[in-house]
Length: 108
Image 1: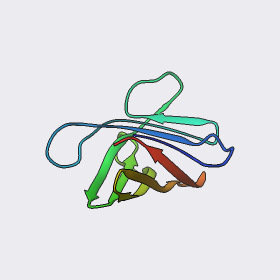
Image 2: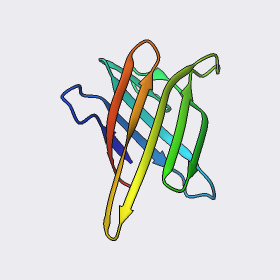
Image 3: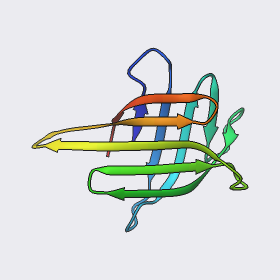
Image 4: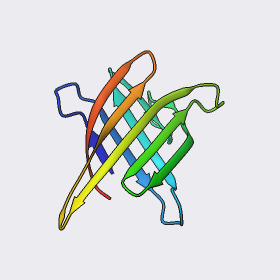
């Protein structure tokens, strides 16, 4: 799943979901305010890990922390609406001391 801010801010979030029962985030990258964060090693990106996550019906809630679990680095809140073949996922990205950004997403 990939998400972007609908404005010109350049904010982007991408997630890789695993194929197991329940919520399994196997990769994530975040770009906001000229900085990158990632669950995988990417040059120049600050490391992050999934601290907690939940997906129920139309809502997905994800909190990412620093590798030591000392603080929440980013929080993502998504809601999906489906009608027939139409689907849209929107939400917010909150990064403490950086800002809050709207998101529009594509993908599963």
